[in-house]
Length: 280
Image (cartoon, rainbow, N blue to C red; front, side, top):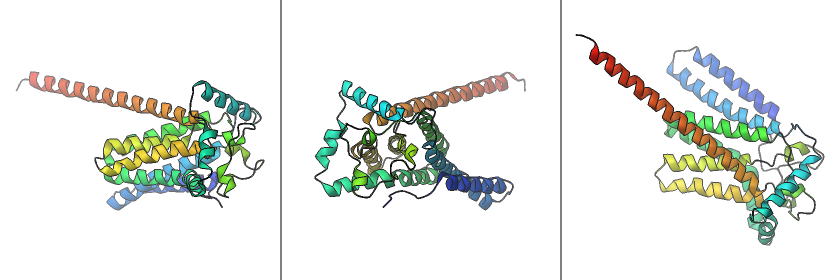
């Protein structure tokens, strides 16, 4: 049983294109309803476009697939040198708890994309003034991760000798097909888009909300970071790198916001000066 949307990247791309066409047509109308419809179509098209690119990234690579296992093994040894927790040890500690293992499999395979969609709806309708910057951050983190993923890296479950099991496959919950069929989609371990999206959601929700419910975002990020590793689909470094990329994106956005604020302040001061020196 697959715990993800059974939508190809081609179908998602066509749907995204259709929504963007709706947006273009709606822009020609001057009615409020058309403006709202167009804005919604544009944002929905963007989400589907991101999903399409994510699906497509697995089918592309700039290096031979055979090197993916070697790069995965290198990451594993790098983690040991950095004294990061051992994915195999933690996974084996969870194996006796069958219900929890199945829950982590479901969480990895099903919740990541719906949680992003729900989050975007929340920002769009509750914090519209922040929506553009949040959307741009999502586009940036997704694009950066997909660009790096063009270099194939095998996840721990596909590297022989590591002892990391494919827990979703054990319970018929795998989102991937058999090895040799669509295998490229399984070699996009570094960095983790799952973790990048989850941490972005947590940070933005924490910034924008004062409700105790904002802890849900933090719990979601922590669970995602943990479960992508315990299911055998990612290394800890996959999540760490995506978080580092996100930190750079947030810092760039912060500096751009400060720059725009200073420019507006300068224009305002110059405008006041001009008006004050103009004879009555």
